[in-house]
Each structure stands twice: as C-alpha cells, then as structure tokens.
Image (cartoon, rainbow, N blue to C red):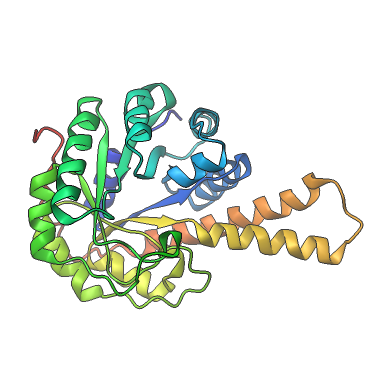
Length: 300
C-alpha cells in the first residue's frame, strides 16, 4: 500500500467518531515495530518524527523519514507521516520544503511557548506556507505538560481563546491542554473530559491529545468519545522497549549480540501498538453524530 495522508486518516476518524493513533518514531526498530503492530490491529496509524528525534539524529531529518516512507509504503496498513512539535524556524522551513520528497503529509507547528499573539502570528505564517505545499497543519494552544520538564499538567486550553486561535491561524487541527503530560511512565493523568467536549464544540477542527501514554484506557475511551481525533503516543513505546531489553539482559547477562535484545524490545513495541490501536478503534461512539469540521486548507 502506498502512503496515505494524515488528512485522510483524520477525516475517516471524524466520520467514525473515533481517533487515529500517532506514534513517535526514534529509531528504525520503532518504525518496524509500529508498522507491524498496526497491521496486527487491522487499523491505520500515523508515524511521527519530532524535532527532538531529529536532534538525536544530529539534525538530519532525511534518513529517519525516508526509512519511515519506505517501510510504510510496503505495509498492508494505511499509514501517514507527520512532523511533530516543530519549533525551530529553519527546521520548519526545511520540513515544509522537503515534505513531498520525504513522504510527509502533515506538520505540527508548536509555538505554544510564545505569548498568545505571537503564537497566532508564528503559526499563521507557517500554516500558510505549509498549506501552499499541500500539508495538513496542527497547532497548539496551552502548553501541554511535561515537554522538556518545563510545562505544568495543570494548564488548560480556554474554549473562547481556542476558537479565536483556530480562526486566526488557519490550522487544520488543534493540540489542547486538558490534563495530559508528556513523558509520563504511568497512566495516571487526570483528564478534563468535559473540557474536551466544550473545546470540540468551540473550534470546529479535530482535537489532538498529546501525552496519551499517561492516560488510562478508560479515560482514553472517554476522551475519544468527547472529541479527541488524534492520539499521540511515545513514552509507552519506549517503556515497553526498555523493559524488554532490561529483562533479557538481566536473564542472560552474557548476551552481547544487540540483535537478540533489540528484537525483544521491538516485539514489545509492536504488542503495545496493537493494543493501543485496538483500544482506539473500540472507542468510537456510534450513537453520536459528527460535528461539522471546518477545513482550513484554503483559508489564507
């Protein structure tokens, strides 16, 4: 199957009143494991590469994204590629300019650390450029907890500000602060499900939940029913990988071939992905009609 677009996956989720899982990629093994897990679940998903992951690979986004595109294109599952939490202006420009050649169909412009007015201005400028290249654009209002250890999970996105922000930035989806936090290793986040519902009614574009690794299964289902359409998962994959590697090395201290313990970690990621994809698919609310969604693709 060829790569699909993030826009297409999200529009399908809107129709089903469900969500699409978006998984953070750091290494080649992540790509292989996520793709296999999505296939086992019989669903679709998004592979996302963050600015931090690119930094880990010494600032070059091409090798990892080309690997994503190659593996995803050979998969039986519908998979898209997304650039996540892009803040650096030069990296944003590079991502937009090179997206088509790398198989990327969407980008998140993260200016949430700037004051409100600056956030709008910076996001609008980047969104206009991204739309001119055919990209689906995600923005963020209300710094989501945990990123770089700097943000508070107590921050909440205001529905009134969110409505103005979406109108002023031309974004296609909004990442909201509703109680989740990045880098959580336990599913103990307290999510404001009522706020999700009010935000969905206010903004008219799909909502994105970051830090979903810290959200319990029950709460995640409730969040999807309330209006979340894209669910970002990263830490849960790394926890599964590291725990499996640690167990193998504890059990067999004389193992030195990295293929042995990396394979364990890769399999653990795959199982985690399958579970999450099935959970998200089961969260669809068949009885609640979808709200109209405003497409911002040509609103500039």
